Image (tube, one colour):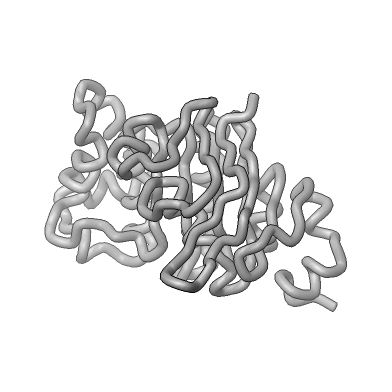
Length: 235
């Protein structure tokens, strides 16, 4: 079943066309990765899906229901969780308080969902009373993902979850993403670490300067000569 559809979406910043009619789809239960160089339009794509940018043209659907033109809080209420680039945790709030903010629209499962996040991220459980701003970069990324999961999203948008993290922490983050997906959450992943992303994903898309240049099964993109040369640093 197709859960998320982005169809012929154009986004403009003034006179600059950041997305030039892109289309993509994500099936229920998939991990789909969106690859591309800096400035290709990856973050703009996620921000447009989550309602932070209004497209000049095109349609975005979640399970057949239009997201286009809806404000971010309504998009979130429909089942879209967004973990932005740079993590954006609330620095003066505790870990517990950050997680509670993720459940702002429905607190009826607060304890159950908090316990689930702490099972996924035991390190956060150890720091539950610690301020978000005092956590390490990896812990802040765990908290940002955990906060998004508190809203029980149907699809989770992840923007550069490995950015600036040590390799061991990156491995942990990717293992958690796989576990979250195995538990039924569909994932659309933007990631500079193309090799890691393609090994995790079912399918991938490649954005180049606001246009969709390639798409296919992740295993095929992983061995594609052009992808290997441009995005994997091989050849």
